[in-house]
Length: 251
Image 1 (tube, rainbow, N blue to C red):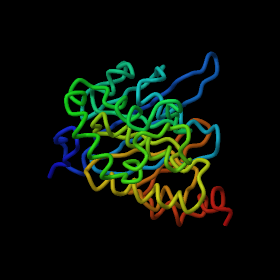
Image 2 (image 1 turned 60 degrees about the vertical axis):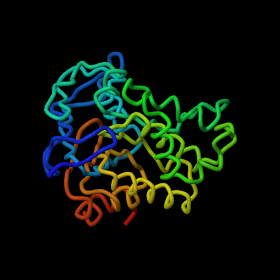
Image 3 (image 1 turned 120 degrees about the horizontal axis):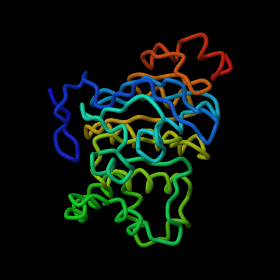
């Protein structure tokens, strides 16, 4: 069985790793930030990384997307070694990174923001079709197409950020704190949209501090502490794990 994506067909079964990370280490100057991170994301899955602020979750995404260089270990995407591939090439290979804080271009319109997401040569030839797909997925953006992105609500900006990431036709979408700074009702709406994205066949790796929201839509999860993975399990088991409930749910 294969998973179809906007970028084509991922030639992996749904239980085969699309992304493999092994013994990943990296530094900020002399300070080591990651200590032997090992994880996998299977084709068609949603996997969520949870942990406290400063645990290293965002750094993991930055290394995977090529923004931050690894110091040790390796990365494989669909079986291909991408350990030293720079960020712009990772986009060409099918990895889109939606950063923490949305980072829309505030003085550009919604349409212009989305168009910038069609970064790859393949996507640039299909901008109009890709735009229509995103406006179908996020109909509120169709009403805001000529509006400056900086004038949108936080939830709408998050939708712009996700849609912009999808314009590159990714196989793997990295989402960093999609609920950050949003009201509970808007968080629910954003996570419903993430599930709609998943139904198109796109694989996702999410960093999320809202543990219940993140794990509730996920297949599996990893708990990250001080730059290491301390626990891996199904999302359901993590939601019922006593350590997770005590540390992150206050129960």
